[in-house]
Length: 148
Image 1 (cartoon, rainbow, N blue to C red):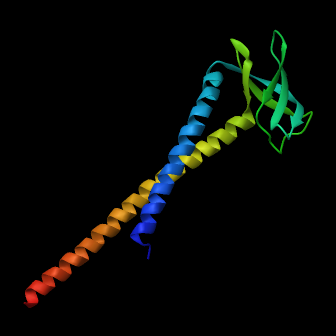
Image 2: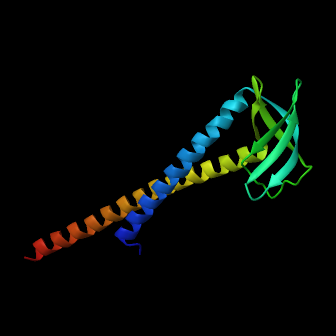
Image 3: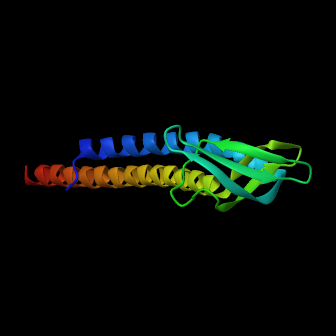
């Protein structure tokens, strides 16, 4: 049976981790969402992958010019010369992100939501457990009073 102290630690840890993931990846992802609202998808080409710096360089062309975007992102599924979907902001083509980045940010945002839900479920379990223990204590006290 889970002890109350362990349950409390699990609740606190779940909520802290959940809020950290949700807040950080939510803020990080919101910048991409703003780009996505006024974006145009195009195909870009992976030009360079710098594992030491954690930077992937992607080149993509708009109607006006060709841009190179250095993204702080390494995906083991991308190789030099691969094509990927790039979303660039129409009014500022220098602002862009790739599809794979958005997927990973949404994944970790979802992990944060899952931890928050886990913390809430554990709170209900703890409350249920405490109520059950309180009822047992009350029944024992009632039996003692009847015996006297």
